[in-house]
Image 1 (cartoon, rainbow, N blue to C red):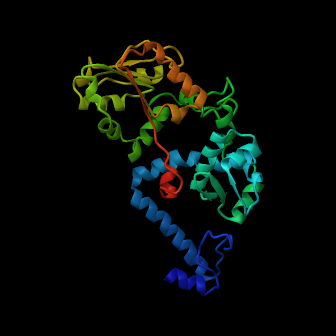
Image 2 (image 1 turned 90 degrees about the vertical axis):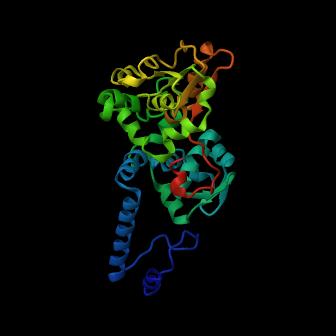
Length: 334
């Protein structure tokens, strides 16, 4: 009620993203100070309710990708596909900007979590005319880093195959090799991501019938420091695991004493033929997290030579819900 009365005192309508509302909430005098205080309080409340670790993880993992959808819109000029006050389908936008419809859908779904667009599974519209107009004037180089162009290019260019290789001479794995393994490298960052509830190993451990493999062998492809394999082995004392990852990660990882003989680390290239014959191959947050579609497919193809009757390939990834099923803040993280 206080917010409503303060806005009314300056003839300012209630905040809304309706098409006919002003693009800014402009206040003056003490009401402007109240507006700033309210924004500060909401920011602090968010930090407090998240807790220190999730708040920090949010900053270092989500912030670096937060502008990806907006960058793609600017770089591929997607907004020129339809008028500011009109709507369009993903297929229409794809045809207009010359980008594959799957890529258009991915970028725009992410942009929707930033409230740039609104819509459903098939059509979308600009969330607000003023926001769309501003977006049309932005250039991709105005944003923090031009991620979007590399995300698409890496799927079709031989020397830029990694999703995180967004700029010439700059890619995620290059950064990892520079900083090295452990807390300063990619593994340290991934350990931070795993703090988030959706990535908890317990979901994988409890969500699949691992006992069906008895005393068989599980290969954890791209399993990093083996955190998931360790959790599975602790749950099933008869199962054995081989974790495969880069040499820098493997060499810096110790096997717990109670898992010696049941847990092993190897450092093959998963773009070469799989040589370990096992009952199951698990790819935990590997394909979608790090690789564009052509290379994700190539990783899977390399498993084929080792597959035997009844062998399983288990892919662990986040599943994106239909538009509007989740609050925007949660859809952004999915």
